[in-house]
Length: 111
Length: 115
Image (cartoon, rainbow over all chains, first blue to last red; front, side, top):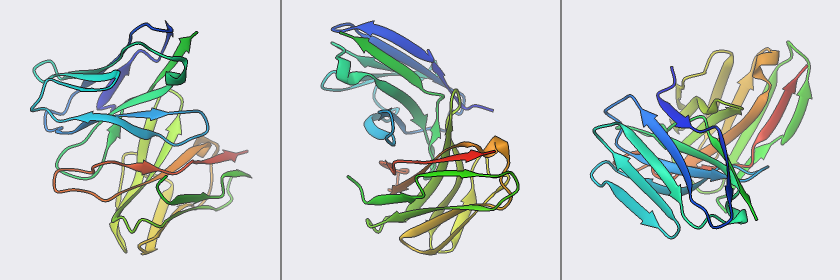
């Protein structure tokens, strides 16, 4: 049972455009929602994270929007650049030290 | 970069043979994790450790065992490898916080092919 569902599996965006990745979760006990970025041949690295007491968090061109009632959260990449081409994973955890990851989204930014 | 080293980085083995992957950290972090990455499935937790000799199962633990005899080393063993265990394996570490895992730092992965 996949507790965190991520969509789309892949997306292509033009340079300067907005990339949007969505995640939905089932467990209402989740209280920590990070996004990880992975480049080919490398391990994932933390990009940005949010807790459910806020509805939005922005760091540079990356924004997490969080909708607690809908049990959904999303990553927006503004002014997408070719260097943003990577695989992005959403994740969630609760009351402990294990992260459950979504299936990943491969983003390609065309110049 | 976090001090995490995985070995071997690449391995090809035959079905039924034992395989051990090693994760070594120099950060003295309490928590260590083994994930596998497969297309469409993201990262799935195999086992994790919250201290020396303290380990627990993740969501896909069948066919895998782990050991942690020292803070810095976390071993993943496939007792009898099967083709379904062909995957990329990632080790991760975290300091842990009172409110959850905090940031996970990942190694560069070990690509295992079981023929």
